[in-house]
Length: 132
Image 1 (tube, helix red, strand yellow):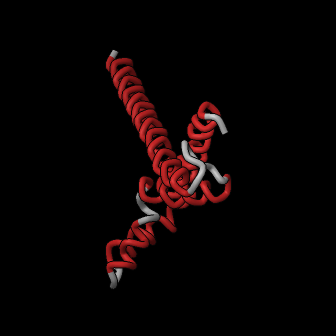
Image 2 (cartoon, helix red, strand yellow; image 1 turned 30 degrees about the vertical axis):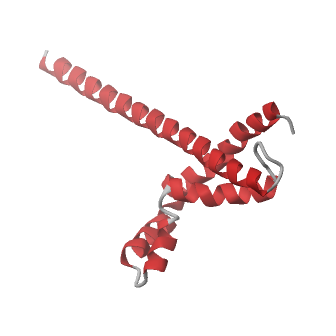
């Protein structure tokens, strides 16, 4: 595979990795399992148990495991055609996927801020109308 194709694969494969990692660790559909894992990661009896359950609460940590699954599934290697290509690809995919998740988080935060500001403006407008 030529380098341009490898780079395209890098940026495309990072999208589902980021989506899966974000959804499992942040979205409402997985709220109950997430809360259970948070509880187990804080109050587990053994350190290995606490660390295992923590992996499901942190999008960065979880993205490593999703990346490994995608590397196996897609047989994607970056730069080198032997096992070292898997290692390079793995860290590159985690990096790009976490870039995507950070951008998504910033976008969601900006949207939430705008919604709050709109509600505030609407409330102020209604108060002004009532006082007139």
